Length: 419
Image 1: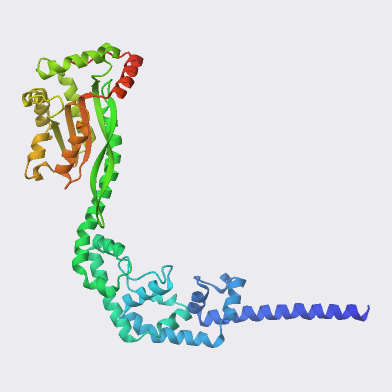
Image 2 (image 1 turned 60 degrees about the horizontal axis):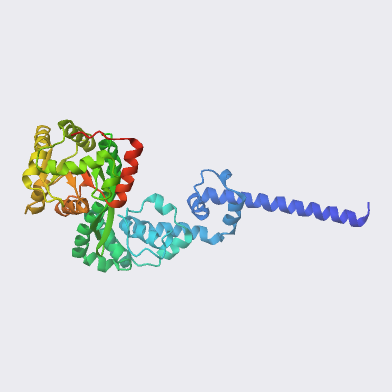
């Protein structure tokens, strides 16, 4: 064997031996450190470690790179800080959230109630974190703890108000926030209203779906969607918002394209004067089905049936009273509250009309009146924000809609009217 080859083999053997030596030495050092400083090792690599065997090679490098003299200093820092954590648990926890969490540098004041720091929390603190916290004075921790306890009290008493206030004043100092209790209390009322409007919108959308399912019980039922425009409460005041509501229509008529209308549509148009004169009426089974739908859609919630007694046809009140007579008797029998639209609009106190569902019953709807009627109902009941359903026995449609109705009647060959 040549000398050069022998030298290479010897060098390789030495290198392998050194690698094994340093690996065993590193592994032994990690075992010794873990045995002596288990909490500190776990905090350093930011992992819960139950056994040294669970420590990866990458983590071992981190552990061995940590300065030897700092291990004992770390323990001393924790011991020195034990009394601080015990005396000011709210301050130390918030300080950690403010400086070392994912919100570090952005958290001016707590978003939710701050819980006290615990022994487990202290164990997870790194050497650098403890070193930074140790620079603060006892006076600092005492003052911060008092502030956080005061803020916890505000959050517990005015949860919606506190959240709304902080959203409107994201950079306000904790001292100003604590001293501004009156404004937070005002925001509490605003915040409650914001949640109420948010809930109203969700409830109305969900109710509209179920309302259609429960009220489309007659062969000729038509669904018309309108938009309710209302003043929506915001943090800074109000804004105009819209929310859809469904109107169920039993029969439609139009003054347009009279010559093109199928016989059934022409007949309804001709019967309007007879309805007005009270010589024609809907059969009782129509109202029975409507009441049954009201009961099904209410799901045991409080319902107010609003009987519309106005339209562009200028019918006398006696006509409305005549046509609603059987319905009123049935509602009374079923213990379902009702009132006339004019009564609801003119009442000084709306408390007796409080409800979860407002069911608007309209004998004859002329153009634009349904939206106006819904606005009257909303303005009268906006304190309670009930969901709304609308039912029209007869409804006027536009020239454009009349064309669609004509096509639908021709397709369905529908001519039987329940009166």
